Image (cartoon, rainbow, N blue to C red):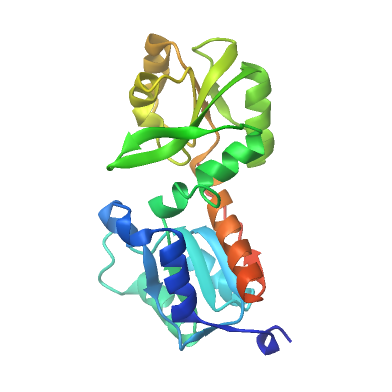
Length: 257
């Protein structure tokens, strides 16, 4: 009976997302291609969300009987041609099952309410956050001045992401200035330290960040690239579901990274 439920025009929903996320004014990486990446025949009756737009998540969206897939990492991060093999299968499934794809990368990271950073800070109980991590002409992350034991903070991160973390315990045992940038910002520990944090929470980073963290005297908590970026698509799809009266579902397809 889901298809008999209320529906919304795809282009109306996409335009609302563009406005809500200020998509046109957020500079991003070229492969992000923020906004509506694939149309359907015009209406949305069920929304699915996932971190990554891929053949696997498209199949999951079809199985869930969704006709809009909202993702954080879209279809065009790597060269998107030729449309052969698995790429052809992905395109064929989208068209045959009338599934649209909407993608939002940095606009969804930095949204003050629905964004990955805001949602993770809320899950960690970090209050009175301020803009942090200036990159691409704006602040992408958030920071909080507080006082919390390093081990307790790590436990909070593990609970928020639903799994293990990797902690580089190279800073103070009591964290007082905590910065949060979800995803793959580990290579930018120096930038985080220069902006005054003693503890940096992000998704992942390269091996050489350990000696760098020691040198800088900062704690780093890696919560997983995938795990730290489930928050935004969940929040956005739930917001849209409430606004337009259509059901939504999150498609969990973890990378383990």
